[in-house]
Image (cartoon, rainbow, N blue to C red):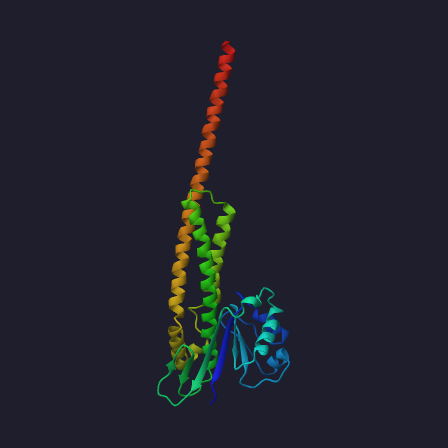
Amino acid sequence: MKAITFKAFAITNEIDLNKIAIDFGIPKKFTWEEPLILKGNILKKILNQEMDESQMVLVFSFGSVVFINHTHTDEITNFLNYIQSFEPDIDFKNTDRYTDDYSLHISETENIELTDEYVVVPEFEIFYPELISTVLAKSVALEKTEEQLGKIHDKLETMIDRLEKGKLRIGNKELARTTAKIVRHEYNTLAYIMILDKPDITWASSNASEFYDRMTEFFELNDRYKILKSKTEILYNIMDGFSTISHSIRGLFVEWIVVILIVIEIALTILQIVGWFS
């Protein structure tokens, strides 16, 4: 059997699968846990060309797209243009920034062999394409999230540099914007990528469950997720520190204003008394 190729992209933070399904009259209501699998006549209509029965595209709600047996760049570009009609925020300049290539090989072997570039299995199982696609989709989405977290770290480092230079004032808007970025990062990771959730097929087949677990362990999805969670908690702690300093400075400023007003009031009273005696 010829090797099956996979090419995964993380192109945005969210894709509404139901909009695409409605466009082709697919009655099923898609949830976050399952991908939209497009093949056959549907792909033919999108790409306006004949499709091999082995070719398909899996679209995930957390912003990843996986192409199976699509080797021509034009096919990928045309499909992403189609997705952009539903998700205008897609930035094509960064399309190749978060991507991964993989392949599935069928060979006479006793055990499943996993490598960075391919997996070798003794015989084909119907669940292999979907499970491999799911792991690749989550992996590239995590890669995108990891880089976004790095940008938040850079922002906080700038704020720390300002504190070291004695510039203690941090505006509420700046604190709010930075906190919102952290919350959005955590939401995208936990709620959308769903690292801890397993595809439905793994609950119906022990072989599928075992294969999926091995794939996620090899791609270190759980470990990468835990690292992201840990870094996020650190960010929250830093933001709490910034917020405490900012509020303390504002409190001190108000106290000084009160003291100054009291001094002014005393001075005016003294001047009135002196003027009255004179």
